[in-house]
Amino acid sequence: MISDYSQRLIVQEVAPRDGLQIEPTWVETTDKIKLIDQLSLAGFSRIEAGSFVSPKAIPALRDGEQVFQGITRRQGVVYVALIPNLKGAQRALQAGADELNLVLSASQSHNQANMRMTREQSLAAFAEVVALARGSAVSLNGTVATTFGCPFEGPIDEGLVMRLVDIYQSLGMQGVTLADTTGMANPRQVYRLVRRVLEQLPAAALTLHFHNTRGLGLSNVLAAYEAGARRFDAALGGLGGCPFAPGASGNICTEDLVNLCEEMGIDTGIDLPRLLDLSRTLPSLLGHEMPGQVAKAGRNCDLHPLPPGIG
Ligand code: COA
Ligand code: ZN
Picture 1 (cartoon, helix red, strand yellow):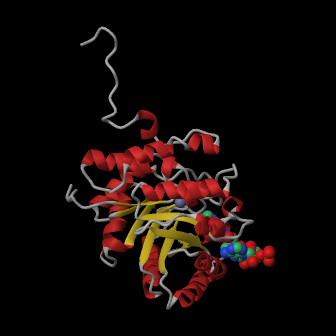
Picture 2: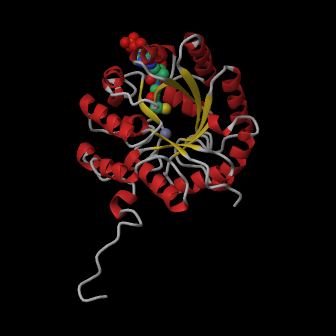
Picture 3: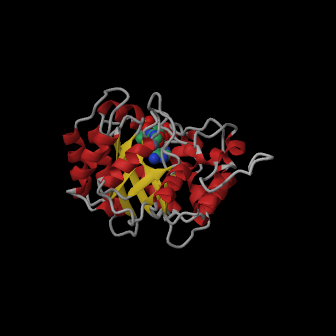
């Protein structure tokens, strides 16, 4: 253990995007706006508030324009939009997104399944997005999906991930996200790759995006933190998943991550009681239980009364 736990861990909340994109229940635009507004009040500095993709591909997020235009922007919060191509970037800029998250899979087959493009076609589209964004105030983040494994191809070559990180940097993107789309990463692999990437990128420019599909989500966070990473995506309640990746399931759960940080003395700036209250509204909004654990168990400090007759 080499880490200095006094360094803040930044959580980007992705439930409004990764969380809702796979939900079968339609969430009304006003409910999406309320959720994002509540998240803004909970202390996040970054919220992925939606995506601007084909409404046929992701019908659940087809109201991105109304959502971005309806939210109450809190000063200091960066509202991010996921986009796959130029059309998505144009829509997101028009809707007032602060940052565009451009997504491409390291695996050719997952990129085909998810984006209906080859990696080369995605990268050509990203060059158009970079040209569009030039001169505007919007910032750009490039995501490498399936970084730690692909549900169709299996292991991903680290050299390929490094080349994609290089390409994102040479395109002038300010941030890079390494995403474990279907929870295939393990802590040893995460530690090694994060160390390697941080030789090339400052920690402030790197985000890790883990899914808890195989129960390793928070272990991977700690491995990445130990390796120097400081920014993580997480979803309220542990919602999330890519509809075009077989077997995909929830992101790491935000309140479980924040609770872990509080217990370890790592600052996140996030109001955990408020977050727990908000997470406990999700089952009625979406009609099912959430995978997150702390919303059910309570915090360590939420003690129980002694049984009658004891003490
Ligand atoms: N927003 C809205 N509509 C879009 C769009 C965007 N960003 N990009 C393309 N479209 C529309 C086109 O205008 C066209 O519309 P039409 O049928 O009315 O003419 C239609 O979608 C097909 O366009 P095409 O470029 O041929 O797209 P495609 O069918 O090959 O799909 C993507 C490519 C990238 C648009 C689609 O695969 C997609 O949106 N994928 C995102 C999946 C996702 O969000 N996954 C989870 C997050 S990682
Ligand atoms: Zn994801």
